[in-house]
Structure formats: C-alpha cells, structure tokens
Length: 484
Image 1 (cartoon, rainbow, N blue to C red):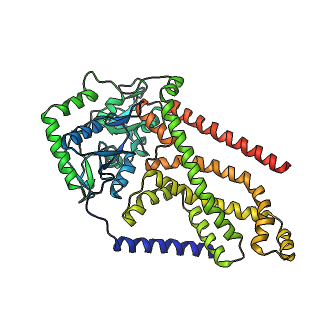
Image 2 (spheres, rainbow, N blue to C red; image 1 turned 45 degrees about the vertical axis):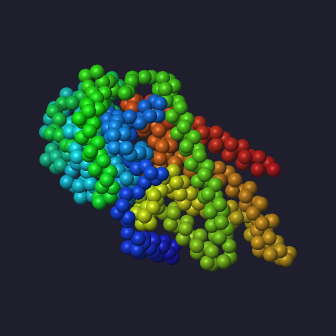
Image 3 (tube, helix red, strand yellow; image 1 turned 90 degrees about the vertical axis):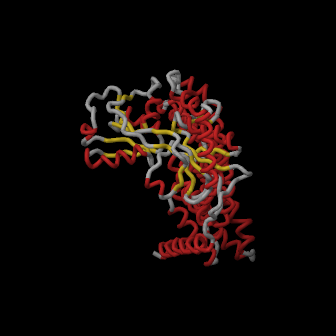
C-alpha cells in the first residue's frame, strides 16, 4: 500500500511539473529546422505513394512530388520514415515540420493541422479475398470482421457505416498486414484508399479483389502543425502549381499509376527474398544490436547504483530506488516509448530523434529490472558474510566491496545476460515510433513485396539465431562460474 501511494504521488508530481513547464514554456509558433533542413514525416508502408526500394531509396508519388517541389522552390528537407499514426503524433508534438503520407484533408484534421492545396484525389474502396463470393456489397458485411488501418480515411469510412451494416473492426498499423489478415481469413474485408489498393493488386502475391466501386474521392494534402511553418505551405503550393504547369506532376503519376506502370513488388520465393533484402535486414539487425548494447550499458550503470541503494541501510536511498523501480516497471514499454518520443518534446519544447528516444526508453525500463537483479544478487549472499566482516572491524562500504559484491556478481551474471536478451527483444516495440530496427525493417520490406508470411519467418529466424547464441553463452558462463 505504501509503495502504491509513493508511485501515485510521483506520477501526480510528474503531471504537475509537466503542466507547469507547458505553461511556463509554451511551444514556439515559428518553424524549426535541423541544419537548415525541414524534417518531413511520412509513412513508408503506403505504396505507391511512399515506400522503400531494395536499394534503400525512398520513392513513390508523394516522395517524387516533394522532391520536385523542393527543387523548384529551393528548400531542403530530411525525410523521417515513420508509420502513419506515428507521423501524425510526431507532427502534433513538433518532432517534424511537415507530413506527406497520402493524408486526406478532413474537417477533423483541419482543426489540428494546416493543409496545402490538394495534390491528389483519392477514394475508399472495399477489398475481399479473391475466392470470396459471399461479400458483394456492404449489406453482406453483417456479422463479419473488417480490417482497417489506424488513423486513415478508410478507417473513418468503415466506422461511419459500421453501425448501419453491423460488422466488427480489426485495426492495423500498416496496409500490408491488413491485406494479409484478409488473405488469412481472420478478417473478411478491408477498406483502403483506391489507388493504393489498385496498385497492390497488380502484384500476383496478393489474392484480393474489389467487389464494389470506390467511394467518391477525398483529397490528399501536405500538412504542417496548426499555425506553424506557413512559409512551407506557401512553398508547397507554389511548387505544386509549377510542376503541374511544366508536366512533372503528370510524369510522376504516369510512373506509378499509368498503363505501363507495374507494382514494385515481385513474386519471389523465400530464398530470393533473403538474397534481395539481405543488406537491409543485416542493417536492421545491426541497429537492433547497437540500440540494445548502448541502452544496456546505460541501464547497467543506473541499475547497479539503484540496486546498491536498495541494499543500503539508508532509508532515503531505499525510498529513491523503490520509487524508480515501481514507476518504470509499472509503465508498459510501448506507453513509455510514446511518452518519451511524443510527450517530453511537447512538455519541454525540444526535439528527440527516434534513436535517442528509443535508447532513453530502453535504458529507463531496463535499469528498473537491473536494479532488482542487483538487489536480489546481494540479498542472495548469506547475511552472515557481511556480519562477519563487520565484526572484524571492516567498514560497511569495504565489506560490501570486498566480501559481498564479488559473490553477488557471480550470482548475477547469468541473470544479466538473460536481461540483455529481454532488452534485445524489447527493441521490436520501438518500431511504433518509427525506429528502423529489425522489426521495422521487416515491415518496410513487406510493404514493398507483400511477402508477409515469408518475411516474418525470416525476421523471426534472425532474432532466434542471435538470442539462441546469447542463451548458450549464458549457460556456458553459468557452468564456468559454478565450477570456479
């Protein structure tokens, strides 16, 4: 009960401090750049509007239009490859200056964002399994499950007719997994923007069809946060007029939607998928290992200090360690990642890269568990060891350093390696803030290839190989220590 009260008190204190900072330091209404470049967020799982090629290059209608306008207007930008939902939150929290991601201009979004002139007219369409002859209209969706992508116009349209036609919704973060869910039979239909779905159906791997006509179109627009970066909107609008006039705009549309266009994806086998994407996958794995290593080093330093606090006879130090452990073990990692990446920048008017936010998140979370490992390791050493040392006249710190800790470390080492494995697996959660580690790399490749089943198997095998190697090493180390 006391622990619960301490945690509630600390959470309340953080909220009060956050509100005070928000009032004392309101967000700057002027545009901000990094090295003179605008930061533009996008969703890289939305072909043909934005996706990544096998060479690691971001392309698509949105990207090509943005490139052409930037060249025409003479500004530079840095693309931030985020998911659609994460990009929206990043724009709201001023982590990015603008967003282009096949984003429909709606009255609800106009309340939060300023939009450019429309640059593309789209519409929502329903897709079902290729062999499904039962669903031919919205009336046939009664009692069925419909897949939608979070925060999209397709999701909003499905919600608007859900009550009328009596179906359930199943939400996803990206289009590729939404298609896969329908093909697997878990969902009966999906609502998606028409050009995106039509482009995806050019790929033989996708076994879907369109039983109905597309709904009347929405307009896509480039967005900035409300009241910010007005010059960026002006440049986008001016550039859009120019590239429409000189034919560049139509050339871009013809490249991706013309009669001779083809889907970027190709129907390849398991091993061909590995061969074509090995570079990206290894880069993603490298990023995963680097994140884990940096976060674990930081967490070890913090966790050991907190663990010593927990084992200390000093009540204040114990109280500090207890609050930290209760707080960060009680917050789900995904919530902590959102708080660090989206809430902290809003509270303190600063920007964090996804990598920095990911390292902070992992470090805070892992340190709480390491603190408990250290406390448990120290308490596992017989109390008589410390009492005997003190009775011989050794001071507390020296007794701990020379007598207790050497034995405790021997006990803790296997648990530390196990915690490293857990931290490594936890990096996959950071894909929600757009961090391109191994899991996010898999998502990006799936968005291009629609090879969901094979790609998740490859990603799982890569995690399995690394984690198995670490587990074997842990077992070996444990045997060596036991025999020492």
